[in-house]
Structures are given as structure tokens and as C-alpha cells.
Amino acid sequence: MAKIRVGLIRVISDLDHEQAQVHGRILEQAFPTLAVLTQAIDGFPGGLYNRTLEQQAVPEIVRVGRALAARVDVVAVSCAADPGVDELREALSIPVVGAGSCLGLVGRALGTKMGILTIAPYVPQAIVRALHGCEVAWRQVEGVHRTTDLPGAMDAVVQAAVGLVDQGCRAIGLACTGFSTVGAAAALRQALPVVVVDPVLAMGAAITCVLNRRG
Image 1 (cartoon, rainbow, N blue to C red):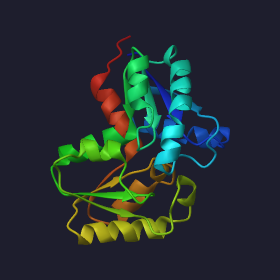
Image 2 (image 1 turned 30 degrees about the vertical axis):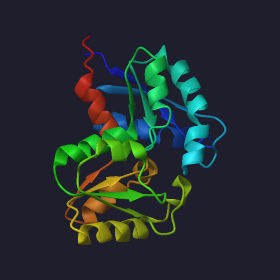
Image 3 (image 1 turned 180 degrees about the vertical axis):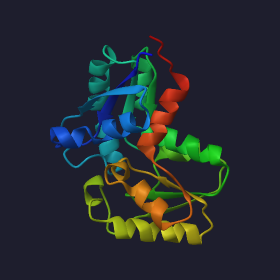
Image 4 (image 1 turned 120 degrees about the vertical axis):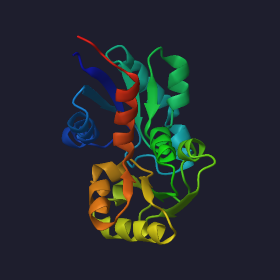
């Protein structure tokens, strides 16, 4: 069977080659039918950690998505805010997925109270829309304001998740793909008796459910 070719867009610019490939490796290890080609956007060294930056990055995300499209079967935007996803869907003839909407749809399918961990003082709208009508609580991780704050912040991540569990959440969604980079889902599963939804893996699940390449 031929593999599904995924064009993965990273939204942090100042990544070395190994750092840039982390999300692609996560996808390929969890979903062996995927082959990931990664490209980062230019001009956003700290990532997209507020709504202004998310909007400013849309033209660059669209540029990168257009460049990838000829070589892949699906484009995936590795950001929980789904910046540029709607615009890419209008511009491209292949499927486009975003980490935020995929995370939210997995959470919706679980049918339980969903706790959302964020790095910003709000839940990304892509997740809010996907979870519309569901019972949701959320918390910003203390001391974390952007993706680059997450390394070394695992104690604070666990404490924030504990707070959501105390509020009755039976599942935790990670509202930043930086949580995937630092392995937060595995750490939380070890620490707490809850389901944890990783945004990068949620994209992989969506892609493999809707695309099928036969050799």
C-alpha cells in the first residue's frame, strides 16, 4: 500500500532540522501509513501565541501550503488555532486539516466533560467551534505564555490538568502542538486516570480515517 503523503506546516520559524521534524516523527511512528514532509513558516521565531500573530501568519501559512501541495496528498497545519486552514481549503484541491479542529472533534466523540489545557488566556476558536454544545472547562498552564515556554514546565502542566480533573473533567485536550513536542500527553496519562488527546495525533487520526492510498 502506498503511503499517504502529508505536508506538515510548522508555525515556529527558528527551528533547526531536528526540531522541525518532531511532529512528523510523532505522526509516522503512530501511523505507519503516513509519510510526512515538513516545512516551517518564516518570520515567526516565537510561534503563534496570540490572536494577532495567528492572523499575521495566515499569508505565510498559505504560501507554504501552496508550495507543499504539489508534492503531497493532504496539508496539515500543526497549530491548535488552525490559522490559515480555511484559506488553504479555498486555495487547494487537496484536503487540509488543522490540529485544533481535529482535537476538538476527537474530544466531542468522547462524549464526556472535556478539560482543555492552553498556553494562552483563551481556548482557540477552532477548538471552541468543534466542541460546541459540549461540557468544557479550561485552564492556562501557569507560567506558560507561548510554545517556547513549555520545555521544563511539565510540573505546571500536570498541576493544571489536576485542576481540570478536580472540576470533573474525564478527558484532557492539549490546546497547543507544543504539548506534543514535549511529550505532555504521555506524562499526563502516567500521572492521572484520564484520557488525554494530543493535537498532532488527532490530525493523524483524521487523515488516516478519510484518506486511503492503495499501491
